[in-house]
Length: 361
Ligand code: HEC
Ligand code: HEC
Image (cartoon, rainbow, N blue to C red; front, top):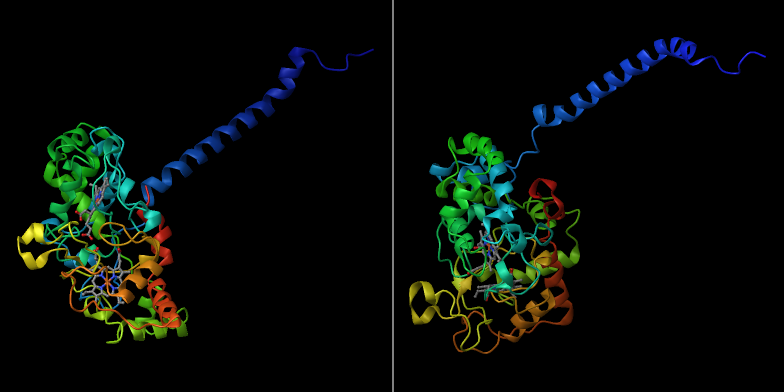
């Protein structure tokens, strides 16, 4: 009876042409696979961070137009800044990055009233949303710094935040070979304290949110701006609620400092620590409100958990401190009017900004 299977020798003879075809095909597939995996990085750069998107009714110019001349906004700088923003190695213990307290899901704010830095240390203020700051005049709740470049070094050094001298942070980054090319492309040399701060500021400048239903409404697209939103906007801009005195239409911040009735005796003196003026007690920078529904809790101390609480506090005319701005006074708002104001505040949410993969690590 002939063997069921050919002997080993004849098998290899019979199969070897097939094997070589299979081998060749495998090689070909591998080559294609390699080409496919190298191609996106080589030929397709990551989606651009620097764009022309501008929120409706903002001062003329894109984020790049308003960047300082000594730190022109380029794609290379913004991409480098983004990597640094999410790099925990910029903190002494390697536990905390900028993104720890400024979470993309929360419009780059912190859902805790007060943020936690290295070794569970806590500060005293709420981490604000980072939105449309390219057009800002001053930064921090008390406006103590004038540029995003200066700002970027402060949390790195702050003992309750990242607790690392900026020069040391720059030295760490300079020692990391995976950063070398990006720094060279962006700032034509190795990482320094200055280029580190400039790169971080460049990324923050690209956090532009300009596509909320409110922005669209200002551009004439009413599709998502319904009756409640329209009534809320009218109220916001009326003397009855008087919100626009400090949150003017379009920009929604006049970049000024006011005591909006959140301050209570013995609390955070706010702007007064910067100017030393008695009249500045309890004043804080007017926030721009874009994406406010995503950046709870509210105010400099994170003391209000919801937008309902914010509207109620304004309706009461603040917490009763004699230092409260005279423009803050008890309002007579019906429950329906409060709901309309809330609908307007929620129309400031830009859903694309909140999930934009360009702004994530
Ligand atoms: C431990 C939490 C924490 C970390 C880490 C942190 N921040 Fe902040 N950030 C805050 C808090 C709190 C404030 C408000 C502080 C104040 O007003 O005094 C703030 C304010 C800011 C502001 C000002 C916003 C405005 O509207 O004026 C910017 C910009 C900012 N941070 C960027 C950064 C960058 C860039 C990094 C990383 C280098 C960073 N932050 C790291 C908590 C943090
Ligand atoms: C006198 C100026 C002024 C007026 C009027 C005013 N605001 Fe404000 N608003 C501020 C200031 C200043 C802050 C920040 C205060 C703080 O942190 O203690 C603020 C904070 C807020 C916040 C919280 C934002 C955040 O990110 O924490 C919301 C929401 C808000 N205002 C909505 C309104 C509405 C709605 C009205 C009208 C009913 C109004 N504001 C009227 C000055 C004002």
